[in-house]
Length: 292
Image (cartoon, one colour):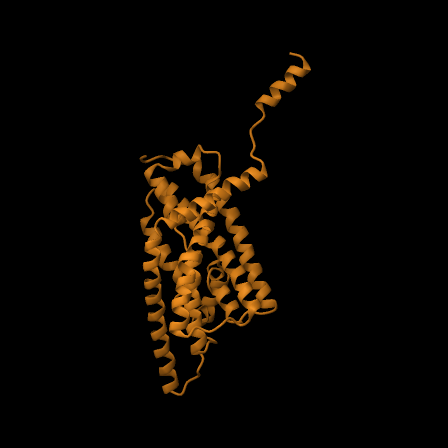
């Protein structure tokens, strides 16, 4: 075969690669599809506004009683560095933020593995981790419009939630919650990957559901805990999901503390994404299909 023939054969055998523009269009399509999928089930999010209001109300009256009891005993008007108004705001913004970044990536991935659906995804020309992340973005967009904003309209005036520390604090809070979405999603993907080895991770998923709300600071602020607990949690990614953005909203993180908080979130977002990619590569080598 002459040189021209070899060049032509090499061209035919060259692996197909999607252009960056093509990848952006593909994954952008998954953002749109996720938004439309959740739009079809919007009624359950309307009822979710009621349930989230109940969650905030429970914490609201609990902390009012706590602070009232301390005042009756002549103790400090602050607990964990927060006044009663700041505590009410903390609780409300924590749940409002959770309504935005929450998703079920871990449960969805575990279901794919258990039901054998994962085999079909592995032969498709895209990376499932990227697809699920972009779907989480689409879900977050839907939640923002149909869930988070309605919750704010109910909770803020009902419980007298305080305004952000300033316009800049509000802007940085939104940036921080965006990073929270990435961190939460990649943690969920890592948990979902356990299904490749364990097959059934329902117990792990239940533990994740309860543990995440506790460890992220949604239920109780980290400043309420002993110093040793705060030191341990500071080395984990969980505080970056809820505690850090809410502290920014309250104006408790400014200047160098604000920068360090955002850098910490960014580091965990990148680190967990890389870790999830490596775990995925290892997990799919051991995949066995149970059903389908």
